Length: 413
Ligand code: CAA
Image (cartoon, rainbow, N blue to C red; front, side, top):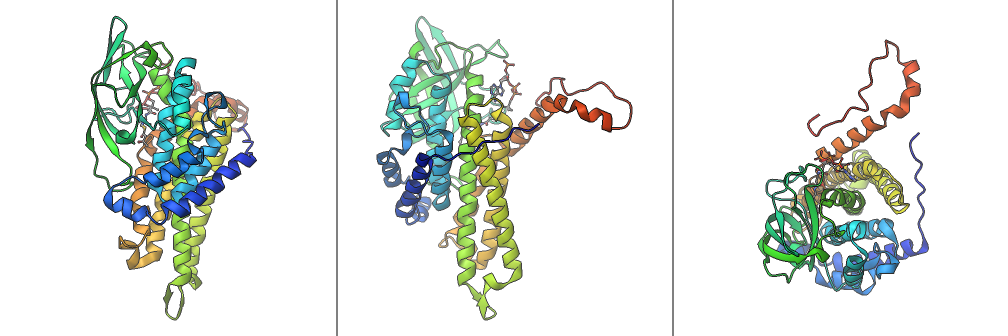
C-alpha cells in the first residue's frame, strides 16, 4: 500500500510562516522588480531573515539551529516566493549547500560550520553541476587528488547558485576515477581558500537577482577535515541524499511562484474592467482562475507531504521528492502562463509584476534535476515497487510471464 503521510504543523512552523510573510511584504514585494532589473541581491531581506533566526530552521538543535526541519524550510520558501521567487531560491539553496554537511558530515564538521550558517554568518552554495555534467551528476570532471595529508581540488563548476555570495561551497569532485560506485567525494571549500574564484556571473532569463556562477577551483588545497564524512567515495550518495531533502525546498518555491501569480491574477481580474464589468465576472476567466487554484493547492499538499515524510526520517523519500519537484514546477509554469494571459497586454509589460513570475517560473522545470530526470526517478521507483502488487497477477488475464520489475533499470531504459 502507499504510505499515508502524517502532515503536522507545529506552532513553530506556523510562526516561521507568519514571519516569512511579514518579511516578504516588507522587503520583497516592494523591491522585487528593481532587484530583477539590476540583477542585485536583496541583502536587506536576507539580513531580516538572518535576524529573525530563519537561517537555522533546518539545522538540528545540537548544531545551533531550531530543528524545525524541511517543513519550516518549505513554508518559508513558499511565502518568500509568493512575493519574489528569486529570493525563494536563494534561501532554498542556502539550505541545499549546507545539507551535505548535515547528511554526511562528521561531528566536527557539523560543529564548525552549521552554527555559522544558522547565525547567518556564512552563506552556502552547492557545487555539483559542470559544463559537461548536468543531469548526469555522476559524470563529473572536477577532481581532487591527495598528496600526503592534502587534497588539491581542480576544475570548474557551472550554475553554482548563490556562488558569489557563498562563504561555504560544498564541492563534489572525482577522487577515484577507476571506481564506479565510489568515484566521487564531497568537500567543504571556503570562499577565502586560495584558488577558489568566480569566473562568471550568468546573465539569466529569470531569477535575475540571485547570482548563478561559474566557479573555479584552481589547486584549492584542503585537508581531510574538509572531506565530508572524513572518508572518500561517498560524494555521489551524499549528493543524492541531499537532493532528496532539498527538492521539497525548490518545490515550495514552485508553489509560492504559482500562488503569487494566482493572487496577482485574481486581484487584477477583480480590478480590470472590460465590456462595462470586472473581467472576474466572465466565466472564461473564472474557469482559468479555478483551474490555477486547484493545481496550486494540489502542488502545495504534495510538498507538505514530502516535507513531513523527510522530517519523519522515513525511508523512501526519493520518489515523493521527485514528484513534488516535478509536479509543482510544471504547475508553476502553467499557472504563471495563465496569469500573464489574464493580465492581457499589460502582462507582457515589464512594469507589471506578472511578467517576472513567468520568467522566474521556467527554471523550476530545469534546476535541481530536470523534470525529465524526476520522471525517470519516479518511474524507476514505481518499477522497483511493482513486486508489492503481486496480488494483482490473479486479476490480469493471460499467462504469467517472468517479471521484469526486479531487473536493474539503467539511465537509458
Ligand atoms: N539516495 C541515496 N543513494 C542514492 C540515491 C538516493 N536518492 N539515488 C541513487 N543513489 C545511489 C544508488 O543506490 C547507487 O549506489 P551504488 O553504486 O552503491 O549501488 C548510486 O547512487 C548510483 O545511482 P544510480 O545508478 O541511480 O545513478 P545514475 O548515474 O543512474 O543517476 C540520477 C541517477 C537520478 C540521474 C542522478 O544523476 C541525478 O539526480 N541527476 C540530476 C542531478 C541534479 O539534480 N542536479 C541538480 C544540481 S543542484 C541545482 O540545480 C541547484 C540549483 O541551482 C537550484
